[in-house]
Length: 497
Image (cartoon, rainbow, N blue to C red; front, top):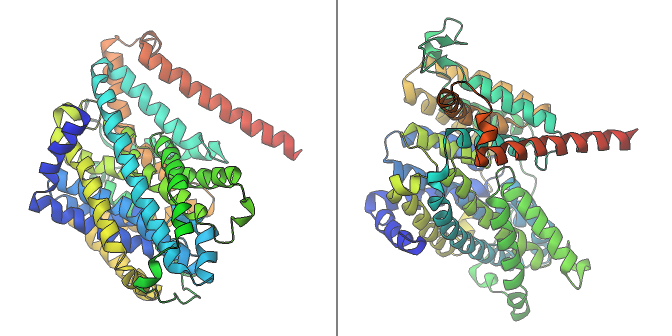
């Protein structure tokens, strides 16, 4: 089945009423949480994880994905109108979106961001369809040693690439790996790190961990500083129409941003935030009038918005076809699949084509819905910015408690999510990235399984990781990343002295 044949096959899956309604729900909810600063897709997906237990794997994944890329659209609204990024990826949009809104052209800025977001998403879908076939054909070449080495490379890349403190990133990954070891050993039946608590015999609940790290900790972190000082302006539909010169400046920056976002989105450890900043810097460098940037340049909105939306789509390439989540949100997606007994990887295209291609097709339908819905609904999204956080955050905490209790009907999990939330807030204050902890937690059991399988086949010989060409490449790449990170740390230390 070729890429486009698979895409047409996926349309049959996503257009089923029981799946399509969750696609619509996901993209609308994603836009809503993107508009509201301080919530974000991570906390929302964490809250929705308990609901996925009652859905089919296809509907669950499509809904969560809709929240993810829908939040990319909504994040631009608060960035443009109030200079408050709804998501980290949309922070770059404030550079030119907010000055353009101050000039009385908020509608043009919103039109530009949504058009560029749609173009970037469509470009990312094309890249996803093209790459998936190549990776599917290479599936038979992967063994247990290759999978283990590849996942370790993904963890090291996520914690070191673009990080100011690689040691802190690696520390978070190691802590996640340790937490992933808690529970009953599958092979021997031995209790590990449970300290006599029967509630931990099945390990730490993924839902409780995600909700604590990204739900409760966000509430604690924003509760004192979240009240807004600005008042969003009213935006009428007729104000959305750009001028002819504005339209002429939109396509090529959006295309360049989509290309850059597609590339970085497919790499573990980079993602849409880095791609949006890099695309903005690139547009400013190639522009004939860079002095316009920061004062309301259309290119400064189109490029990063196209980049972060393209990256949001292609981020599913390593997650679904290799089983390596590129960022914490992708780790949650991977966790949702594991909950439903689905093993992501190169064989997923052969074993579960309806799920993979249904998800890809949902990207097209979801982004089309976002474009159609968001333009006339801008006034509603703007009014959402007036909801006081003192009303919003108590509701979030109630949903956290209800959600985590509904998974295992365990009061222990409620106390666990509270403790994890406090720990997550403390980690963020110390400038640790809790998302890397979640990456280590999700990938840890998968690495352990493949590591044991590889050593069992090789009769305990660790040289199997260097004897196989694929795993040897991953091992050398991992060592190279660690060496580059150490060199960067030493260089910065010498500069300080």
